[in-house]
Image (tube, rainbow, N blue to C red):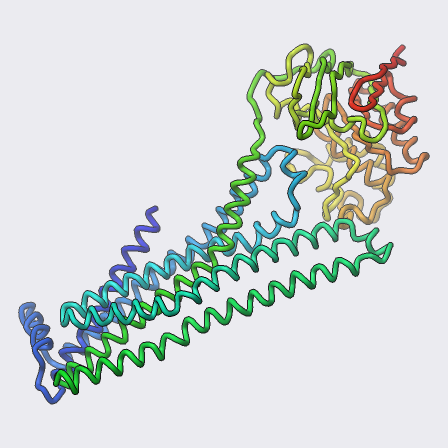
Amino acid sequence: MRRSVLILFCLVLAGVAEGLGVASLLPLITLIGEDGGGSKGAKVADVLSTVGLQPTIGVFLAILVIGMALKATLSLVALHQVGRAVADVAVKMRLQLIDALLAARWSYYVRQPVGRFSNALGGEANQAGETYNQAAQLVADLIQVATYVTIVALFSWKLALLSLAVGLLMVLTLNRFVTIAKRTARKQNRHVKRMIGGLTDLLVGIKPMKAMGRHARFQSLFERDAETIRRAQRKQSFARHANKTLQEPILAICLAAGIYAALVLGSAPPGEVLVMSVLLVRTVTTIGKAQQGLQALRIAEAGFVAVTETIELARRARESLHPGATPSFERAVAFRDVSFAYDREPVIENASFEVPKGLVTTITGGSGAGKTTTVDLLLGLHEPTAGEILIDGAPLAGLDLVAWRRMTGYVPQELILFHDTLLSNVTLGQPEFTREDVERALEAAGAADFVAKLPEGVETIVGERGARLSGGQRQRIAIARALIHRPQLLILDEATTALDPDTEANIVRNVMDLARSTGLTVLAISHQPAWARAADHVVHLAEGRVVKVDSHAA
């Protein structure tokens, strides 16, 4: 707020300073003209005399130079503040977007293309900052317009009305190009967003697309979007240049008509007409500049509107992280007649079972049985539509959800390893974990041996999505990531489905040994028989219902 006030104050003073400098042209020209100084120039000379200044050529030239220099200085101060504000606005929009995305509930991410967020974080956030810049420039132009109109009115109210009339004519004539620029900017932004979203999705699954030779189809889709963007950019460029270029002939026609009327029909002094022409040109030109600024603002506004809408949508999907009692996990997690539906389509119906502390429990069932949804409910990513989930007898809805999640380690089927070192992938960049913590987690996950054989050890770059590692190695790194904070409950959500039987058997054996030696509670979601054979308890799901619970515990 203070910065905005400072910018506005400097812009007002800059406009006044420029106006005083230009106003000195009237008495200067009339002083050296044939008319010996007109009535308007005489009034200015009288004002100077009252403050002890002689109306000489040197004084008027000094006023002109000082006014312009002061205007430049104040404008520089204002624009420096504007530049800082532009950077602040762009950063603020990015942080607001990140905060809104990280706080959104899980179901929001499922429905949104990742590329949309990438575009919002990059280009659209920059456009949001540019919107502030263009708004400040527009304010500066409007202040200049007001200053010139005031100065012109002091000399001649008729000239002031003429200046406003010419400016209004120019604005109305060229307003169509402002509308075109605004419309094409939004169209361009929309198709760029779609192109980035599509390309992001394609690159995530590029291997099977190239393997089947089907990536060429996507290229044609991108070419179609690119052609639409190109047409929009061309129209936008034409609208911007037309708005600027056509102002000059409109001004020239009106100026010629005004000079002819003043000299031939009105018999006005040539010196005065010359100065009035200068003031008319400056006033109308400033009005035209303000219209160009409005056009630039409309173009930048498309990005601001887009990123604002993205932030607002994410905020509406904000997850309800209800505060509550600190959870304890000493006995068991229990589902009691839990039901859940996606868009009124039942997924889980009246499910009841327990996950005892210190044992290995497997939830098994065919595709679509509701296994992963059960885990999502346990982690509070979804809320049951009926029934309740109990942690040591306490309803999950009344517990601190964040604290409960911190007590768990989660390994999904869709592994996400970042293009970074093994160390960073295990710690996720959290500084509280030491190298000893990483080595402990790798040992517990059965990954220590293969990591030790890598030339750079834990400093090895794993590649995009872990492409430099095998499937089993990626899986073990993901397990180490889940174990590094010493969770009380380890959840494996179809974590070994994509692995070959031998690799899966090794991971199952390693996890079972870990559970037996440390008392870690394990919940494995899998339709693979290896987990069902190894588990202490097996919960069988079919069409969202618990059909059987087997106990192998001694």
